Length: 134
Image 1 (cartoon, rainbow, N blue to C red):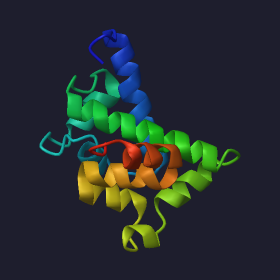
Image 2: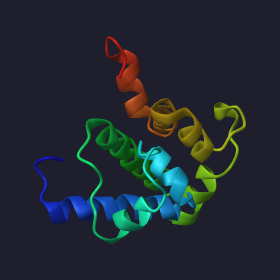
Image 3: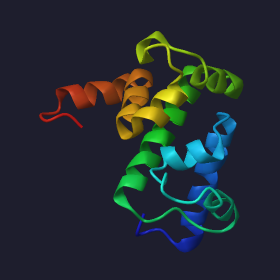
């Protein structure tokens, strides 16, 4: 992200938050998903307006997983954004009857990787065939 302009970083931030809004995720859970759980809840408003996400490797890793999850949902449900939102909020046997959203919020980075792996078989294949995993 360090090679992005300030405007590009702000646009990325807005896009990610809009995507999370589309999945019906609360502001505090959005901060947790982005690895910003120690940040005051009012910060979400500033991020929506004109503040970019921190240029932090873990935050950017989480953003990458979230974008790839959204991409996999678009591939899985190409004709309906609504289905992606429904899937993200429906209990799933793979996640011990938790929703994918709850899995990501409760399990942090591991949860993001779990949901991404479930949706994106090429990513799942990559992490299982690469020595040392992800």
